[in-house]
Length: 187
Image (cartoon, rainbow, N blue to C red):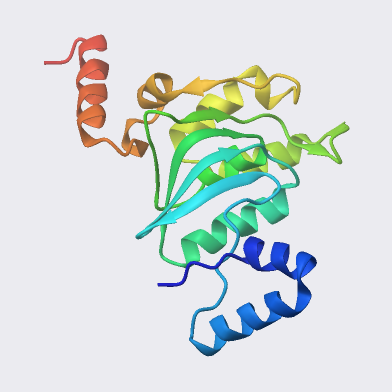
């Protein structure tokens, strides 16, 4: 099992160049390549079996964040949101075809801006279109879709009411469907 991370190798590389290079060379020779760092400037995640578990995503420029989440999906892994995802991370994580959210999930999307200053209504509609339909409708009706300073904190209970199919917990999905039927007075 490979226990090296790129972060450790580079940290050692700065501290002791010869030792770090020898360590990296030995790992490569043994067929143990350094693993990608689990902390990007905006996203903290861990790979667990067939899942990429995202514990934090604070957003940033959309393109690199969407590329990161698309790479997770291309690897065949499911994206599991297990913490707070904000801004571009909120769109990138929830736009994946194989994703779910846990009880710790908080979804905080907001309107797209150009270089964090100028509103981009077309960009906002475009990234919203990647979301599952119930989340897209909710977001486009929310003030956050028109004002980047308005950042909602949509927790697990509200997510289950909006989009129960996205929950990682099948019991919650069934309960949410039962509650929705009861609210509509269906048998």
